Length: 91
Image (tube, rainbow, N blue to C red; front, side, top):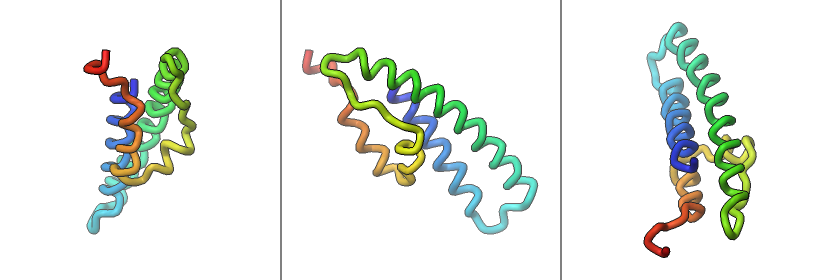
């Protein structure tokens, strides 16, 4: 679930970068905005899936809010979530 969420956030970050590229026309900005709205919906669903799974782990992992995920505006910020993944080599 965390990998799915991370992938969606990375896609959103790339879409945000595209909007800031010089020479991006109105039609492209409109298309990117629509894609970002779809990514936001997908992020919410993936986040719900992650939060349900996080609570079932022993010990439970912290849950995430949409605002926390969206505020992670850099890939390095989102990489901080890696500690939440359970390493199968430990079992």
